[in-house]
Every structure is written in C-alpha cells, then in structure tokens.
Figure 1 (cartoon, rainbow, N blue to C red):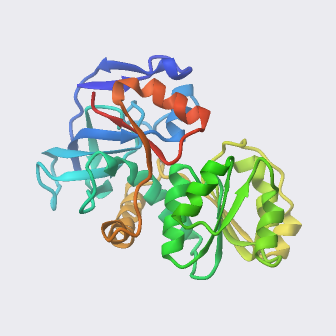
Figure 2 (cartoon, rainbow, N blue to C red; figure 1 turned 180 degrees about the vertical axis):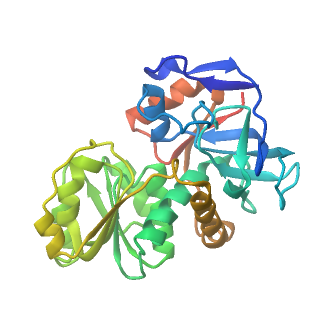
Length: 326
C-alpha cells in the first residue's frame, strides 16, 4: 500500500507519499481500507518530531479515518467485511489501509457522506470525553471554547448547545466569529481585539465560565482560571501556547476550581473504547437527526498532505481539513 511517511522530521515537505508494507490486523482488530482521513494539530507535532506514536503502533500520521472494513482479525465480532465505518486511531490514518482495534470503530452515521465521516472521530471523542464525561457540562451553564472555528471548536459549540448550555467562543476574525454564531454560539470574543476574561465576565454578570475547553495550554493558564466561575472546570487539551506556565493557586482555591488535562492517543484501549461507546450512544443520534454536523473546510488528495499541513499552520481554515485517497 501507499502511506504518508516521515523519513526525517521537519516542515510540511517532510511528508512523503511512499510504498510501505500492508498492515495486518491482530487480535481484536479489523483492517480498514481508508477512503479519507483528517488533519489534526497533533499530526503537525508528529511531523516536527515532537509527538511520537506509542511503541508498536503505526509510524504514519493520522488519528482518524473513514472507510470500509476489508478484513476481520481474530476475536472480533459485530462487524463484517464491507461495513462502512469511521475510526479513532493511534496513528496510520494517512494511508490506504490501517489496522484498527474494534473498540475504536464507529458506524458511519445514517445520511452522512463516507468521506466526511473522517471529520468526526477525533473531535467527537475529544469533546465528549472532556466536556461531558470529565467536566460534566450541565444545561444552563456557561461554556467557553477557545478556537471556536477549529474542528474541535465547531463540534464543541454544537454539542454544548444541544446540551442546553450558553456558549462563548474565542476566534481571531469576524468571519470566524460569524460562522460560530451560525452554529449557535452566544458570546463572540475576538481574541486579537478583546480580553476574553473581561468579556466572559461581562457577559455573565461577573460570574465567569462554568466549563472552559482550552487548546492553548501555558499561555492561557492563569487567564483561564481568572475566567472560571465558582466551581468551574478547566479542561486542557492542547499546548499551542506552550507547555510551562505559572498558576495562581490562591485564585483556583477561591473558586473551588478544577483543572484537568487529557489526550486520547496514549489512553489504554479500554478507556478509548469506553469513550467511543459513549460517543456512539450520545452523539451519533444528534448527527443522524441533523442537530450536529461535521464542519469541513476543504478536501485534498492524501498525497498532498504537505499542503494540508500548511493550511493548518496558516490557521485560515474553519472546521476540518480532510485527506482523500488520490
């Protein structure tokens, strides 16, 4: 098969479409013939040499895909060859085939195009696990998501609104904020021109946000705590703003706040299977009845992955960038 390889870490040009051995499904796995994959910020880090895949996993980037089951491995039941699926991956999505633990498979939602289904696994699993399973966002609470126009952000807006929350977003342009408003965002904050701490407090009568989903990490740490309401929960899922920050523990104590930080990739198989099962139970019905949809900025051939990485680095996109089989 062909896959995007990374012979040496570097810029987007380090991504090379090359012939590699076919994967073989092991115990509890299926082989998926990939139709499409999606680009995530973690893929950019892997390309740069900062986010290596776990030992024994695929060396190729790609944390999600959609396609058809081509082979069933030993110990797998409930799935058949030819089933159309999307999948949460530990890696290997930028390829023509990938071996996937059966617990990380999801059926393509009814009514959704198979290609666009690749935009779902990572964002739905990330948002549902952090915002609902860990931070326990409740109806009528205020939810703030940074990077509201990103793949994660656009899904977080929709799921939080479906849960009855008041949604605030940050984004860097009027175009992006207008798009977020179209998805249901109530409070629109241009982080280039406004202080999100002041804006969220003004919009909530000084109370602050009950739950914050943060992709920035160190850069926003103290300001996120300042923006929290009493009993607020800060869920950190990224480090675009650095990995080391100082925290005012006194402020956190005064708010009886909680901070969590998670990734999906390194979690044990059982934990990822539990997240996927929860997404299938709670999110898939929302997609199938039209309340929630994947937001796709554009689709590119998989052998043009370098161009897709440049698009993410320029941050002009809204929603997901997909890679399709050339």
